[in-house]
Image (cartoon, rainbow, N blue to C red; front, top):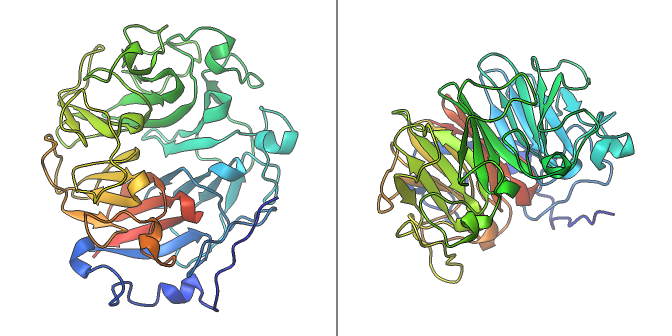
Length: 401
């Protein structure tokens, strides 16, 4: 049973968005630079946290972990409800319902495996979504240890055309019920197509799998490159040793750079690892962000933060202008002008906080259009960035003026 925490007063987020978020109690306008919150999908909860009802609707989300954004498409991994919401448009007002719910038999069922109907019909903790350049539509169904693939964005509820990582549609065991291989997953939390290559953050196996030819059409096709492990059968945290330039603890998301490089959000080591060019084999990263060196992997929770330190950075994305990072446990999104390749390069803007030293959930104030609580996922397109504001049970779209 879900418990609702109802905000006091009669504030409504639709009204809240009509108010200047940079009032005296909020952050200064130059903290956000040209970015402003535009529209909210999910909980309309200005003033306090509101959990979704036990029976969700197509308008609510519960702990969303990922989002996808395009000219004419918004997709939300409604993780806590074990489903994916598809908007065949960019919503123009707060709280609009999705056009399609995937992973459940209707708009109000919320349990894993389609409320018990079975893996072939449902999902269990979806944590990644994307539409590839060739039109295929993918969902990282993390706790079923697979990636679901549709040949195009579905226009109705229907099973996927392919499940990568498992031998069949009803199979859900980690690593196909055996040891890791080049075509198995253990909690695949994030994925991306970067410069024609298909990357999967195979988080539970502490590695990143790379199909250099793009998204495979055969679930038995192994990845051509394994990053973070010495081979396809090992899965030790940080290669069973201390963190270094070639290891991961919890790799969670992958993105590219403007000049053909690669960035992996290694959330468990509180850092990002970067390669100047796409690795053709397992090799150490060329640079690190968020830590002073390649072997440090510490969290700094009880001190004023800086713009160059992270606490569980679960997402990184190539945004308009440069790199954007969801610094999840610091309740903020950091944005650089360009692609930083040195841990000392300060970001240009911080979304969700009044300064680079602040890190409070919702700024230790009330929920507002421009506050954040554990942002897990990011997507960017054109002059927009979408933030999966997981702790506030919503997705907020920001625009660049």
